[in-house]
Image (tube, rainbow, N blue to C red):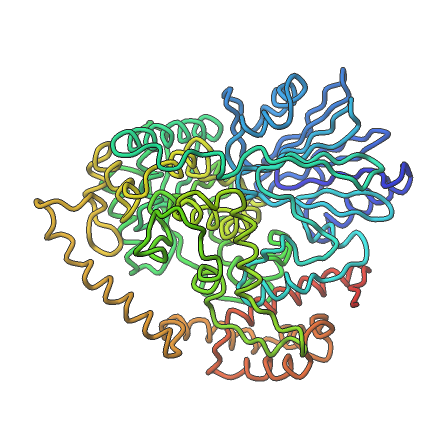
Length: 612
């Protein structure tokens, strides 16, 4: 399903909870442009499910004997072969087992919400990485749980979370979980139990990176394990969704994902998006043609408007850049109705030692990860104008994000630093950044990545560091099991196969690739934060938006809701400079536009934004 709303009485006041639920249903129609597909009521709960835009999404499963019920958000797959559409059987697994075991038996991107009729409590089970977002809010009228933070914020007056606002404006990612103070995001791989009429919540983790055995497999054993787990994940996806549309770009991850689908015989169509002359597009088209796979090309939308951003708001809750996502939305909508699920290669980079270059020359040492270094060089590395914040409120992003990295890596300080890097990447970057994109797209139609399956992820995390460096695990796996896919060039011109004395000459483009990386790093250090061509595109979009009257009205600093929490002189200067061609903070500007549009939309529903 695409979304849900569950309400429990706060203090055994069923009338108040019913009113809160009814209000939430109305707000879902106005804010999220969706109507409930099914509803279920009891004397201690109210529940509703909302279908995706493509109409998919099952109803709430109910067991009359026990009074228990279950709804499942996202794309889930059970160890027994169950998948989306088998919610009644999944409920039976819970009734005859327990929440922790159910979490361990599930794979994919999901949130499972169970109404336990015996305990009269709601049980929330999240996926391995917290990738599919869901939230909870306590109000005087009841406890509300939903996949939409925007919907929960609209249920009553709200505050902005200052740290989350600064996270978002500075990095484009909300590491606090939600931009609204009263709304809390459920964490990764958790089983949380919420009791009607109680503020106490019992929570347990059913999985973490500490569960794996690092450096325990390697060589052909690792290649066999990764290939077999990828193929099994592809079979599960193909069984649940007969017509997958698979991303295929010029890199490793989508290539490995599609190669596994092709090997299992699942009928797929491949797709790519980007400028028609880009290496991604040409490699994707050529590889699909060589493999004999149907292929679609989606040209990125050229126009941009505030109206397109408004259409993206019901999908993102205002917690992802609306200008960026409006383009993603239009591309995905091209596949709705023709295909069942969108498949991508996200998380595949874990097999390739992503970000490990920061650990050189001590890659694999069993020493604590330098969280400040990682925060400075990957999480808080982009340009950011701090003058927007009031005196004394400037945010030391590096310190703040380093604390988040340390929290994500609790319990694995004695693991190899490579696993600690993977953990920070998965539980910080992918949970909050990629998870917001995945959660938004799930409201359009199902989406999934085979690399996110626990059976696949644990193989990657357990593989020896020397087998994952320089993408060797993926290269060797493809060379053994799909040699034609390994032989075909990547976007940079060299093959995906391992280098040997027979093919070393084909890796000559690497020299130009690394030279370009060095030039970009030097350019960043002397103030050229992005290639000029990209800057010019961003600037053109910004100036195009400023030419629209409705945008000027939205970003009038005298009327802006964000003006109540930002430094007014700094905001005035920022917006004035953003109307000039030469402006270094284009991304920060579109994030500001995103937040302001979300806030004004909320206030239009009659709720107030409170300021301390």
